Amino acid sequence: MKYLVQLSRIFVGVLFIISGFIKLNDPLGFSYKLQEYFGADVLNLEFLIPYALLFSVFVVVFEVVLGVFLLIGYLPKFTIYSLLAMIVFFTFLTFYSAYFDKVKDCGCFGDALKLTPWESFTKDVILLVLILVLVIGLKHIKPMFSKLPTSVIALLSFIVSLWFGYHVLMHLPSIDFRAYAIGKNIQEQMIIPEDAAKPVLEYTWTFDVNGEKQEFVTNGSYPNVDGEYIGVETKTIDEGYIPPIQDFSIESEDEDLTTYFLEKEKLMIVAMYNINSSEIEGVVKLKALTDEAASKGYTVIGLTSSGNDAKQEIKQNYKLDFDFYLCDEKVIKTIIRSNPGIVILEKGTVVNKAHWNDIEDIELIQEESNIVVVDQPDNDILYLIDGKLSTKEELESLSNDEIVKVSFLKERNKGDVLDSINEANNTNYSSIVMFELKND
Image (cartoon, rainbow, N blue to C red; front, top):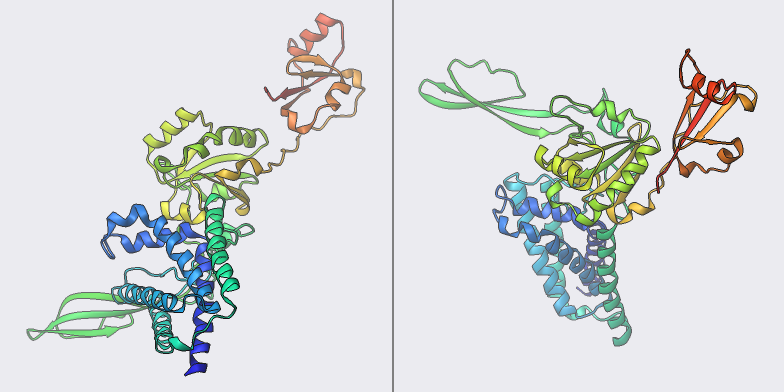
């Protein structure tokens, strides 16, 4: 019994720490999963939805701390019975979810490892058995160190867990397990390979045969039955291959623009799953960032699930010079754990993501000038900086960050601006290079 208790102690402690840390890395994601459980279609506890994030942080911190407590043998009685209460609750939750087919993924390991409801329930049953072993063998659980080091480790585990949870909430998850992580290509994540496993469905047909209802099960084909058809029900036996990204779209009021925007060389997405619940402090920062991005050649758009009134109101109130497009709320929450959040794509590949707290850290690439200056004497070129006559030396002293726009005028028609300038100044310029600077 003593050895069985120690093996159970190590297994349960390590599993709770790993499971808790993965969820602590993304407490917002776990809170979204709790909102599913609290919803009307599952537990019908909708009054708890506003407190989902609070529950999320408490549960995952408690999970990590209990795992550490168990391994070091701190407060064994409190730790074991707390673990028992927690696993009983989660076993009920996963059974309810699996039996009634309510929530497809329990969120036990966040986005790092997806488990089906029945797999989650099986895992919880195994843990329940192991924790019952710990309850029975409670006397065999002794502290690993003396009292002071054990207390210090226990306190540090609590402090570090709280700090880490707060840190990722104020920024972004330290490890991104989702399909929209930096380096992932959205188009590739949406493709279903030709040789991918197909869904397997079971069809249950009901017929009235001589006044008696009878059921016939097939894989989809219509049964050869001498009776009156009543109805059919389908059941998914195997979902087959499911692409990592299924529901991503960028839509206007009348068309799907997903492919159009995913082909952009430099695309900045301002993600706001709900405009009305967005962080005001973050919205205030958007004007400067998006204007700078536009000046450097980025296509800037917003993604939201909010309606047109909310879109127009935020654009007017904060003088935002980009348009919002429609995307599913759940998808936007998956893309980035921030409201608002910034996502930068290059031809559909995620190259950067930022929480609104970190907007100032985003580095934008200046669009290279498409202007090619033809070989000609410098005295044939007129340089204008913000409409003022300038020299080539003044131009070369400018940095890229100072320049907003460059225009090159060469083709001339009689009576155009070049003719006017040459006539007024007795010059013979054949081209104009015009530079527009930032207005600080």
